[in-house]
Image 1: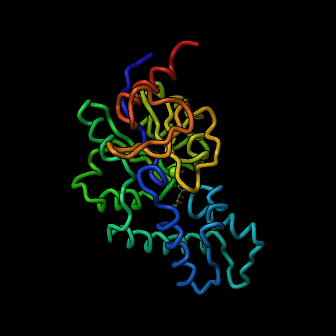
Image 2 (image 1 turned 60 degrees about the horizontal axis):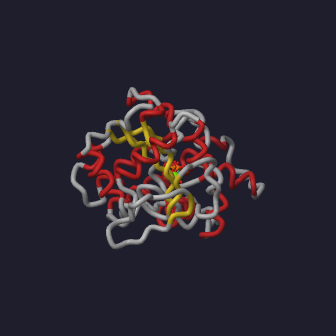
Length: 259
Ligand code: XBP
Ligand code: MG
């Protein structure tokens, strides 16, 4: 078993609660701008989150509702244009600083850096969404804390396929057993596990709390902070009261013990 060398974070739902009040309104703004009478309410968006990736999610919605736009000759180009508008709306929102990082994220990132543990990102979302989130969350230079940002269409198969985690590992120059992954969703957990990242911590949110997360050894409601009680849904924090670096090291040790 090797030492823990890096932590690979998902972004949406993990670093920040971006979906309900970030991506969702940005999709709706793009639909309105394109004069489509589509509106994704909170519940419908939760169903659509089954599919990762914004362009893939739009196509899935059109398929589910059997939507055929007679004026559209090239559906792929239409979806790409609509998605570009969505990204513009989403980035505009991020630039207002409206989306904070989740509880415990900055604390854990700082602990990891202090211990010489490297940081990486493996996400489905569009790369500019990641840097704009990191640049506008109130921590100067945060994007530079990450050695690797693997994001979006650089892989052909999005989560739950392992590809984005495999790419992050390759760019880190590390093996799965050198790392811990932090995710928030079943799709993300399945992707991490399929890439061999058995040391996996899941921090759920309202959209994902009832999902299953494969064999993820630790599932909590948040990373937590001093004074904020963490609810443990699976596994144990040991003597800790929130998810600190020692907890990640424990998850890592346990995951790669010889069976
Ligand atoms: C995140 C996503 C993303 C965002 C939208 O999945 O599914 O698609 O909802 O981003 P994960 P884009 O957290 O599992 O990586 O619209 O930029 O694709
Ligand atoms: Mg996620």
